[in-house]
Amino acid sequence: MTILPAITYTYDNGWSPEDPNGIATLANPIEIINGDVTFSLSTQAQHITVHPGAGMTVNSGVLLTIADDLELQSVSNAYASLILNGDISGTVRYKRHVNSYTNDGVLNDNDLISSPLSGQTFGDFANDNSNLLASNTLRAFAPFDKTTGTFTNYDTVSNNNTVITDGTAYRVATSDANTLNFTGAVKTDEVDVPIVSSGPQFDVWNLVGNPYTAYINVADFLNQEVSPGVANRDLLDPFAVAVYGWNGSGYDIINLFTAASVNLAPGQGFFVATNGNHDLKFAPVMRKTSIQAGTSDDFIANGNTNAVQFARLKLATTAKSYTTSFYFDDNTTMDLDPGYDTAVFGGNAPSDFALYSKLVGENNMPFAIQAINTTHLSNVTIPLGVNANAGEQLTFSIEAMQLPSTINVYLEDQVTNTVTLLNTSNYILTPNTNLQGTGRFYVHFTNTTLSAPDQTLDSIQIQSDNRNKNIVISGVLSTSSEVHIIDLNGRVITTHALDPTTTIQRINVNHINAGVYMVQVHNATGHKTVKVILK
Image (cartoon, rainbow, N blue to C red; front, side):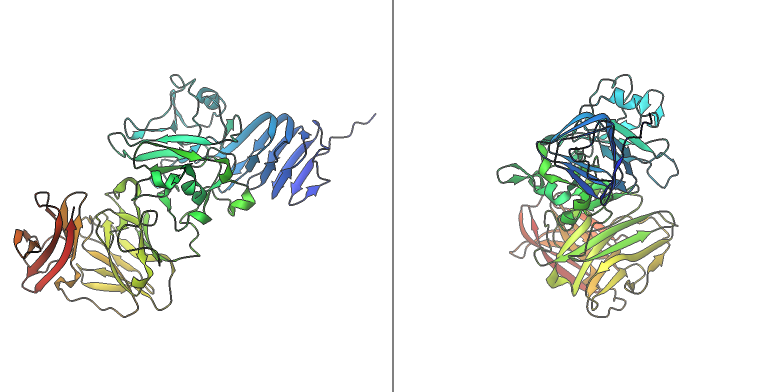
């Protein structure tokens, strides 16, 4: 008697040899290669494999009975997705891609990931993954420890029985760039994740992650209600209402401009900055299959910007790069717009290499994304911050832009007294000294032609930094200058001499009462006066 091999049911944007819903048995393998499938009838299978980029939905009231296991697969840029509204009897595994450790000084050799399955202990996880990067009993699996403000690797001895927490993310690395095997239950309910403001550094920053076996949309996450009238976004620092995801060399920032078009892969970790002690909420309504997600990436670099006017500037050396973005929108202002103006990760730009901007209005925070009202598109000047080492060639360029063809984007260097039209050429220089902060470089958006500026006080920026109780004066002074702080009755409250050899200067005003004041800078070339509000 000849025993025929069991039929394998395969879905590749269509079933072959037929739809297994309700007819497959425990002897039948099921392979989902491409596209999305839905199980609407209770079904058995020997095993089910969902390939990278494919998706599967199990409807409410449906039971999948699996003899071996249900395996969800991924590669570096494609992830299987499962939306479980019914039940599964059998083992569920998620083979989650994670970067390898190379120690090459360029890539950062790790990923931020959360477990897409629930209930596994770290000891079982470590035993099941020999490619988890190891050093003695330590493993490259580290939560962000709020008591120290740093990552702390788990130990296979002391953390053997530690349960991997739903909705918490970890910094993880492998030895071979292959997948890590997670085993556990599929989350189908809400997950509340505590976020706290505490610790000696990075106090407001918390590392969280997608707890589901499906994609989630960033806008859905930010707008998810945690209580009537209060959403996740309302729990975040107003300077950082966004998702900060690690892309291997820096942080991709998704704020409200691009959140609706960006999805996070199953088990994707990211940072958020809190405005206090709260519980964020992940909800099953956020879940999306691969086709619904609209992308197969784990975190979409720079997002989809088709719907808005924007420009993204890049600063690059031969080995690294940094970007900062500007969005023009009718509903934003020159001051802080929470969810749209978004600070750099950590609230401070890296001291060795960074490009960022300062708000045209009142604020001294370094911003990765700045929102500007569309009425200013044809005439606005924005201070740029640049941190870079001496002797290293720097290239300023436009990485991406979606603006009217009539808009010119100029980079001004006040030290060399030059302006460069970035629409048509890059600006390249090798600084003789370290660059740190604002005051030297400005970006101009204009519908006119600019030439090299005269060395007058017109280009000096005067702003109040109420967080640090400073008046900040940025720009190149061609000669000895003074600053006067004057009240509305015309009385000079204080006078300070300015240093013409530096491009950014801070005047402490902690001793001055809150109110409206005029700040005047003057020298032999003239004077400039700006009204500021001290709080």
